[in-house]
Image (cartoon, rainbow, N blue to C red; front, top):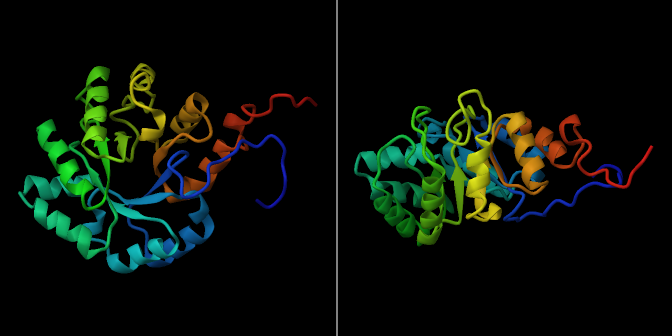
Length: 256
């Protein structure tokens, strides 16, 4: 850090499994990636190339290489996985992972109807090849999944070989874990946490108010995802109590 402040919470250090920040790249240019990793690389643990943007991204190999050179792994959005699955191209998808030297993959079923046992089979198979993140929750705002089902699916997907499970919110933060207004489904989150360890979950939280909510509930080192590149440093200040939203969280024992 550039100077010393007292009562700053301790952040886990990279490579970390807790206090994880997943950034979403929705089409950055190579020059933008260079600038991004230069300014924010210390605070980013993994980058998702959102949904199926990798299919149309120019200079994809070069982009992935830039992230790798900065020590930041990359994975392809779950919607791309679903696009391969619905077309019967699972082996082709595995070939793409190898072609681009990817060490992580996301398995999801937010846009397609997929038998859950079959989803777990895909997780088990991919886990022999790469580190798997599996996403739970629907991209359909009208589809409300009860808490017990979230818990059941998260646990079985972890058991199948997923490294972490992702709570769905989309890039807009208005489905899955959240109401269409962006408000957190608080009861859902709290019930999930009665059964699934917090360090095993990445909560998609693209909106500042959502990030603040999770940090206040679970602390500085909560795992958060779908963070815009422009919001990485602002999020880090929220984690450290250096933005108004969490300013008082870590000031115990200090008086003016």
